[in-house]
Image (tube, rainbow, N blue to C red; front, side, top):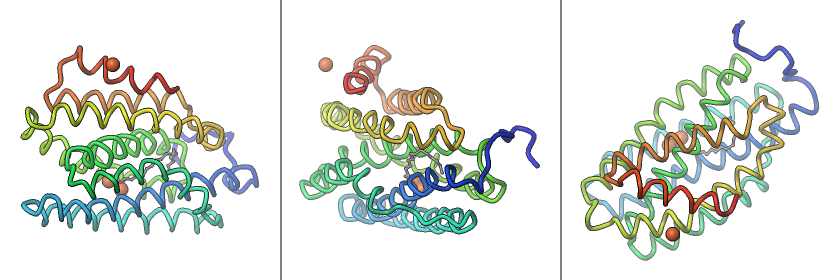
Length: 230
Ligand code: PL3
Ligand code: FE2
Ligand code: FE2
Ligand code: FE2
């Protein structure tokens, strides 16, 4: 159907389905944790409770959409793998939430995880089967609005939270790099290139830091902290 679809991908092959079981598990778990994280944030930012609940509902819908993508290919998502994949980021979010660190929570969920999702979904869309492509196109539009929520709050509170954002970046960006290395092989089977993922992530993420108020010089320095672990 789609002229840009790679002709070499066989969505019914065991190789494709095996890789898809882990990637599909990751996105299902990622959407589930995003749903929970936005609910946790309602306690920390009660002024935005209504918005945050709306975001959390979108995440629950995304999860359902990706579950359908797996079912459509007769793949069972590997959720145990996915839980381990997110464990460190998830733990950092929960520690920050317990300490009332709003900026850290927003850096982890609304900036890092959403930029990771936007990059992954954008790279996946041209390679996806017809069913998953339609679902993912709808999802990625929502993810931009989640990123925007974080940008706006952090920008409005920039002077007060600047140092906390820098620390959260330093502690969490290296985790994303490790996660990218962990999915590289499976992503390749789905027709997704790691360099393209990294590039798209960095474009989204540095754009977000710029919107929040960081200078180009500061953004370069903050990006280096991620690369250290690569
Ligand atoms: C937030 O709304 C969602 C969080 C999901 C995180 C997704 C990370 C995906 C990394 C794996 C790369 C392959 C993507 C394939 C898309 C189906
Ligand atoms: Fe989502
Ligand atoms: Fe999201
Ligand atoms: Fe430094």
